[in-house]
Image (cartoon, rainbow, N blue to C red; front, side, top):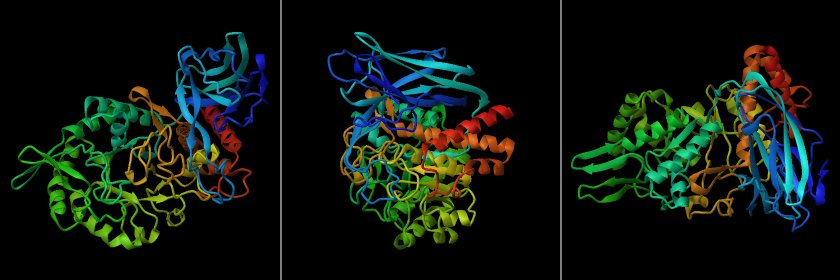
Length: 553
């Protein structure tokens, strides 16, 4: 229940799986206590409502032995015109009407001033960040305005001795370097652009994304046929008499930047266009007369012409560099995204044109047809969660999963309109089926669908009304090139924490024991389309797993 403060304010504590909508009284926790393993961030919220204007700026201060380990951020709402469609699913959505959705996590203004939104409910996001202290600690949040103390909330955090095990899952969310250059108005690969890219990669590493999409050439993704995205190719290409010459200095700097930020895995952008592998990606080259010019693109056939000859020169030189840099075992290549039945011939021709050139390197692509996999179309399939059952039934080893705009029926996803528990379900699902990797196409896609124009992601969250809000990105381009996180990114990080904790318990208690614990009391076994809807399940499960890990040492 909400706690009435002085002067008509209201305050209450909420868990990290609740959304506090401006016009709706939140479901509050009478008392809130959370546990965390060493090495992880644990989060909760404080909701508040200011009754009217004229009370002065509301401020918050933290009183806790944990000191600077307590991080406070305001939860800011953003507009969404297309959260989804009426009739989707069987009701497992919070709301499908257009409106304001709480999502952006923003550092507080000077003096810890809070955005008030007079008469509206707002939320404060509270993180307890990793450190060395263990034990049970109070976290007191004291709110005040110019009239004095307006209210106080107290939560308890227990930091356990047991450590969160290392992440085994390979996880990529596609970083769009061109969107950062476009939003901030920067020249691609200027020093300013490198700085911004580094900030975003650093956040990826912090939140469990350990593989980064790397633009050998401008990625041929989400681009209208005949259209172009801002050039961000890392490989420098020189057209000379008798062939091609390549510069790998920028690519090496990229690899070193990823390592510096804590990411070891490199995922190279697709070698052929999306939706059928019919053409070459956009490639620009320096000509002999000193002019830079596009030499390949939509007008270039994927196979059998000059682009095939180009790849036969380029890929051997690239793979030689990867071996020299010692990263050949931590790289993967893409051919083209999600081949359908009518596109299969073109995909196979593109794949075969480079197959011998990538011997010894991993290749993976999105794939929804088990029959295609059985026929050897894709070496490592990345399968949509609503098409994954045949792959699971046939026990495909090293299986990856993904979801995106099309996974709106029954399965987990990260849309604004979905309960955050539906987002967090991913962790138990990945554990249940031993999934090796997870992919999402949009870490920071700040374009409309098909990249026909750039957008302001704070004002337009649905790719021009084409993708459900929350699908195109999970971070916002904050001031000074520093990304602002979303609630959904933090919940995805919680899901990864669940996966790691479950794996840790399985290592000491056995996988069967953990599966039984996960499904205790459930009417049906967990699948990708059947999983607990109630947020309490995930909070209780994690509490129990944490206690078990602490008890078993």
